[in-house]
Length: 194
Image 1 (tube, rainbow, N blue to C red):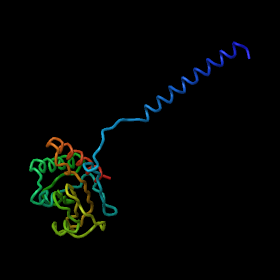
Image 2 (tube, rainbow, N blue to C red; image 1 turned 120 degrees about the vertical axis):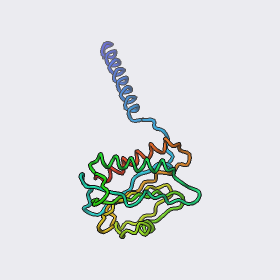
Image 3 (cartoon, rainbow, N blue to C red; image 1 turned 30 degrees about the vertical axis):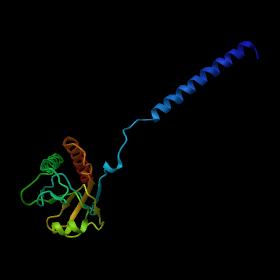
Image 4 (tube, rainbow, N blue to C red; image 1 turned 180 degrees about the vertical axis):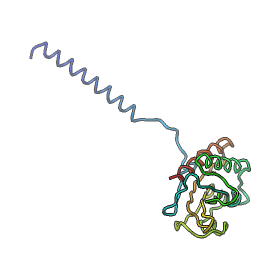
């Protein structure tokens, strides 16, 4: 090989290595993201079940089956302002989704329960609301859980139920709790619409 070919080969090899190194660095940068650590104890996911064929279609109305109920032992509570915000946000978002609240003749009834303190079973909630057993999947709800259900007013059978552990961080501020409620209501509404 001539001196010119050796120099050319070395130059091409050097540029190729630089390009590969740059590409690998770029790829590594794109693949790595920094996220805040999460504390599993305070993260939640929404779990829902529905009767086969149930759809809560736009235009279908609702009313409440009583007030939002808080099941708490003596050492736990939820502020009234949080409960009011939860109800107001849920009503606002349902209305925005095309579900009017009516005072009588509702297509469906809503029931909401916040469990703080001791865990509660689904069968205990059915007895408490005096509704018919349905949605055969049984559940035990841990402390801090919000349970929302859509009930057929004629049969008093639950058509859809969802639960999310929401009130689990005893150190969160009011603003943090309200932000968490807003995100949870959004998740409930999206899941109910599917």
